[in-house]
Length: 243
Length: 243
Image 1 (cartoon, chains in turn purple, red):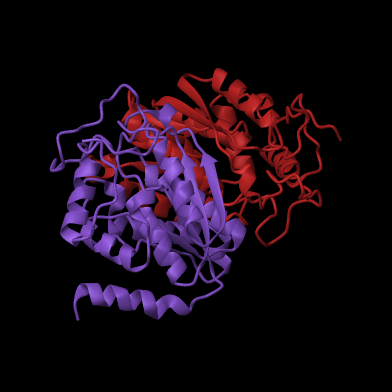
Image 2: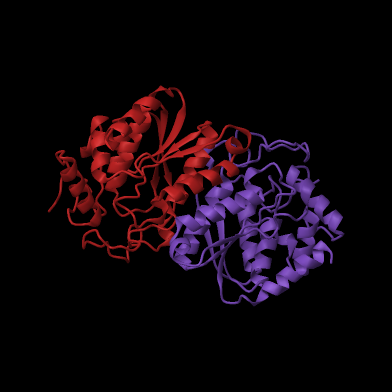
């Protein structure tokens, strides 16, 4: 059995968990759109959570709205948080230029936002507790973004352990699970899986500096990874690139 | 050696770590005021972090400002976050009455805010990373607030483990520490330690429903615990109680 077939079976096998609530982090990017489709396909009642955190690409939030509208989602909440005032990242700090030299830097990229996934998962945890949801989905990926500490399996596992000590559900109930279904997949594998589930990738935005209409620059690291993903997946890339 | 003497020695022994930056969570309550004094006494350059999270007692933030003003603090940041829209707690949800029947409920109290300490520590972690701070102080206490899952030592340890997997400092540097110096102390022990360090407890507000002038109701759980703490510590209680 190929890895791809096994992933597909995983999706089908867990499709019977209908009626359970899940909080799904939706950024408007390719990965989170795929993650939302996976959670919905597994039968969860999906509560989508997005953040307005001072990101420079406002097109991202518009994409999040479009992605949510294209799926069966019970409720979409956009929480405004103020990571930008903490500074320290090209994605939120206007004083740092976005790198356009292509992927390949072996270190932690300048586009890293401090503790971003921890902040996002913390809000997801708070909402999950209020909703009585035991499942949180996040589209982190350790393959293409190997430089981000908070995209690794060991980080997700540690957050899950902490979450189960932090909350009523963990202490009194039967536990919370943090699902990161894309974490070990390549971009091409993610695109193939999403395409099988009917994800409309034309709604998503990956570019770090997309224009207000959602058109991608075509030269930033994120555009490189996206383009190469569609090429490797042998699926037509619906992205509107400026160059 | 009594426990109290040992605590005092701990404070003195670690007083040589001058120049190191620490992020200190300051709510305006008795515990966080003591924690800030401990961090300052240990020689840290303190960066105070407070939250405007829709709490009903606005007096709390005024108290936080007063507590910070009374200490050597490099910078005080108040981050606005929107926990209230998530609901689920008497402290932020206007539809739930604050219990005034006195302390003693063995379960998780209704004043529990979902995942609050996890959200707060996540922001502290983000700021610490930007500042290059390796130390975060939080005034949680497992004795008086035994019903709060996220006030227990095992929770703090799990957050620290997660934080060290989440961040550049954990992955590339020499690690982050989450300090909870009050976690095993009684309220009386906290008050005695703070008094030795010169904390002005008249600036602090514990009451869940303090009036705009910072006067305490005198009947809520938090007022009960505070009153009994000063009584047991044999230190005059400077709190202005309405009843």
